[in-house]
Length: 239
Image (tube, rainbow, N blue to C red; front, top):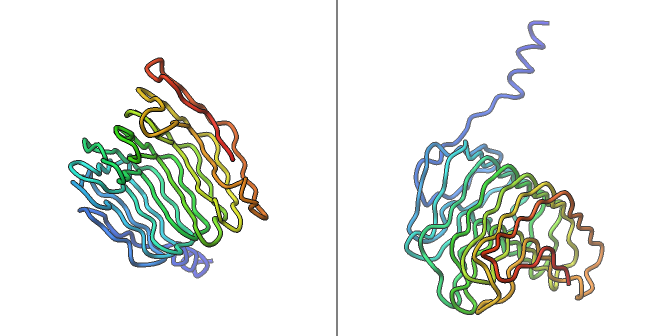
């Protein structure tokens, strides 16, 4: 009995890696990374995830990014699998992007799978002041392969700015397949319209018109609040 208890404890023991400064690159696989304090970064990617089987525990802390220049709160690197992000506040700083710039809270461009993003708060404060300048809460874009086993749930995403913002967006226009669950998120929109950067929306799935094979996306039990300060706002768009 004593031996069994010791083995059990050893099996579940792990050590956490502290995120205590920015920018920070998570390069060690099979680890838990814990944000130790509120942190900010003027420009560039605040946290980059470059390893598989990583957990980001925000520890209730706030990451502020894009304070004086463009960048992402969390950037997920190429072909990452088995990732969890939770209990973190990601806040866009005072920088308003110019044409061609992006200031997304969480961003991934390319193939990946096994991702859970939950119980976070994302604040997008600027974007769409000019054409082709965007700030999204969570944006996944795939140009070659699959987006598989993705679950986004129980997050709060606050959006404001000028136009063109999206809380959760997938661009799968030439992807092979997309498998995702999007549920129990709270999305609040303020001060948004359609000009000059286009229609803002809560959840957008692009690519169904391109003939994606083997796709299954479930969107349910999300709450979207559109404040009177918005002149135009879409709920869910899929095409």
